[in-house]
Structure formats: C-alpha cells, structure tokens
Image (cartoon, rainbow, N blue to C red; front, side, top):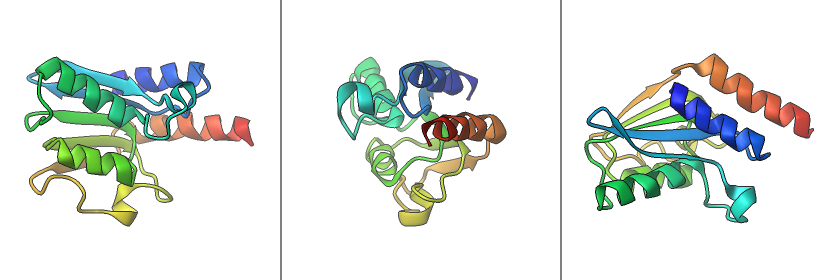
Length: 137
C-alpha cells in the first residue's frame, strides 16, 4: 500500500485526484498507475485501469488470476468491473468511498473467488484525498 500511496502522490503533483494503485504477482510489481483523468482528458483513466493495463502488458495477457491489486481508495463501479473482468484474485484498499465505491452500487462486481481486504493504511489514504478536496473547495 505504501507504493500505491507513492503513486497517489504522483497524481497529486499533477493536480489529479490522488489515488494510486499497484498490482503484485509472485512478489513482484507487475503494474502501477495513478489517476490521469485530467491529464488525458479521459474519464476512464483511473488508477486501477492504468495499473491493470500495465500489468496485462507485463504478463502478455488480459487475465490476472494470481494478482493482488492495492489501491488507496475503494474502487468505483467501473474499476470494480475491470478488476472482475481481469479475474484479479485479491483486492486491498485503503479508504472507503461510501459515495462512489463499488460496495454501495455493485458489491458482486469482483470475480466470485476474489477476496477483499479494506482499511489498510486507511487514515493516511483518507487524509490525502480529503486534503486534496479541501483545497479544491
């Protein structure tokens, strides 16, 4: 999760919503990403999508069944769908997102065998995103 937070800080530097993501398989990082929606002018350029794309390129295939995805904020419905389609077996996230998170709208979006761990470095992840939005308002 610390590396995902490093990715989130990269987004923050570029005035993007500070969410970061890394994907690990066999104890190696195979993909990483942070929000690029403003930079790319693309609403789908979320951290998880960037990391999934990078991981698929690294492994040479679209399915990531042996992978763990770490993300600083609970995935949205779009990202949860992509995580499910990629067959990622474990999802670990920091801060919950009760307004936009997958658990509210689509709690079964992940692969049926996927496990979820919530609240890892939650305070640090929450503070980063809250400070960003305080400055915007």
